Image (tube, rainbow, N blue to C red; front, side, top):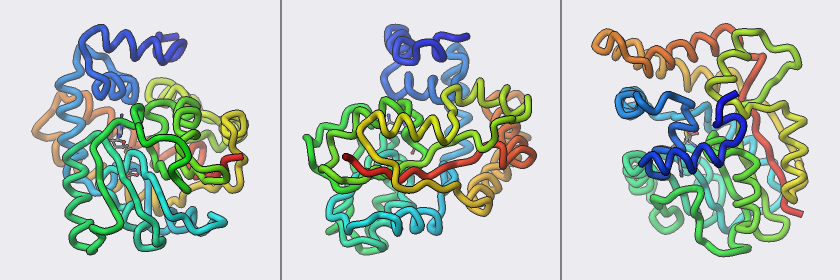
Length: 279
Ligand SMILES: C[S@@+](CC[C@H](N)C(=O)[O-])C[C@H]1O[C@@H](n2cnc3c(N)ncnc32)[C@H](O)[C@@H]1O
């Protein structure tokens, strides 16, 4: 067992003592990589992702499906880890809400700003650079918190506990997370996620955690295979393009291995939407 598995918070504190800032420390945890190689690893990793539109398995169809399961019309939405803002724009088109979309990656927010301008959404959507661990909006502010493929960065249980107070009573949290879809995953899936996402859980464990954090789980569904493909096909193409220039890049190798696992073992694990209401 590694420190990150036994005590994830202590691991982050330790990384901060080693001189990593919070953003870097979360990334080391999130990518579960060797920090001695961290600089190069992150550079290569970002070089792969920077030109990609999707930074996680997300689509207009699945975002709209999750939104349609809300039982009231939100007026204030907080989106956490919005990336380049594809879901943000979908939410803005589906709702009449004021949306605050946050991420700690300024380059992604620049792309979202362009989309806000292009879709004429300046009055309803604001993009803000901040960390999901330091959301100082005050209590009872939002009808909906939306977090696609981002809660895992600080840990789902911690995210649920920290974000719950920001919601109004009966407000909703909608998040997506990688889960086991079978009780008997293959050894290569187990080995891969043990390194890359040690906190992967079954749907029923996540359900218990959601309820322990003061929510009632109202709906849950697995994102479609098409959604996965729209994420991993451009990712694979980009990793292959860069692989010839960066023959020894561990980051590119890891991305290619992960894509191969998606191709061969998808169905054993998947991204799951959880739509839960604050009690
Ligand atoms: C896997 S991506 C998902 C992005 C987007 N929601 C999507 O589905 O395409 C995770 C996002 O969380 C952001 N992120 C990472 N650490 C963060 C932090 N501490 N605070 C806020 N956002 C963070 C990343 O920059 C990235 O945009």
